Amino acid sequence: MTQHLSSAVNLAACAARVDLATRFHEEEESITRTPFQRDRDRIIHSAAFRRLQYKTQVFIYHEGDHFRTRLTHSLEVAQVAKSIARALHLNEDLVEALSLAHDLGHTPFGHAGEVALDQCMSKFGGFDHNAQSLKIVTGLEKRYAEFDGLNLTKDTLEGLVKHNGPLLDAKGNYIGAGDRLPHALAQFLNRYDLDLVRPPSLEAQVANLSDDIAYNAHDIDDGLRANLITIDNLRDLELTGGLIKAVEDKYPGLERPRLIHETLRRVITTMIYDVLTQSQINDDKTIISFSPEMQRQERELKQFLNAHIYRHELVLVKMSRAKKWLGDLFAYYLETPAALPEDWQINADNKEKAAMARQVCDFIAGMTDRFAMDEYRRVFDLTPIFR
Image (tube, rainbow, N blue to C red; front, top):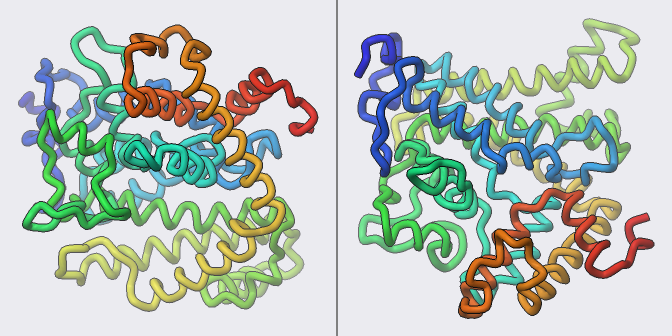
């Protein structure tokens, strides 16, 4: 490998190495970028990444310009993850690529959309957003002349599908969420080999934990902005209560927007410092983790967010409506494949039911919130429900 491409300088011995990075389709190396930098760039320039701008994090995109979307969430995850990787001397480029790609497979309308598509696909192998991310970067993105997908390195692909942990035990039995290997992942493994038995790389573990740190903080921010929770609600939580008091003691009479920001930046910093401290003393398979004390505090915070934001009546009503929209669109396209865009109709009449269902699922999963709403309006002409 060209000397100036090496990013091994100052990296920990356990960090991912660019000189060992491989792709399933061989390509000439870049003289200006490492393999992981090329992965990151291909992800950023993909259509799926751009669509994240109009995909729900918690609040549907049109509810306000300042709420997080999947795109801004991914950028915040990457920032947190790179900070941790830099301090631990891990490969920042791989961490960044994984952070930016981790939500590519998410549906419109957040987890409500995922539930809807999983129900629609219950007879055809179900739906899993992690497996969908793999499907996007290995097939659905059709941009290059020599291959489908983005031809990312095996390090990035493996980190993408098993950032939550191994998916197979030593005997090859599935141990992930659900009762079987997601269909998209199983199909990929029929053609190419990924190591799903070993624990994820440290870079993948960093990206996974940074996802938690980012959404814990920004979902508090968005919940406050939407008036679903108040600052006083946060005073009773161990993680946030002391930090709010510290800010108020240092800056008496600080106005609400500054108080929120000063508190949340301390939340992020506190959680990052905890990860850095704990990860340097861990000696088990999961190296990158919170301390037991922080795990307890974070669990309390997540329970609070679930009760007061994710399951707030206003959010549930809108998500229930979104699930109906996607379910209705799925049924419509499955029965009327000619209604799909022309580039999605290839051999539509000759496809078996399961294959057609997966094609419809891929089409809907790639929709943005606003495209899904526009499409529902166009197909069913029920404009008043959108008012």
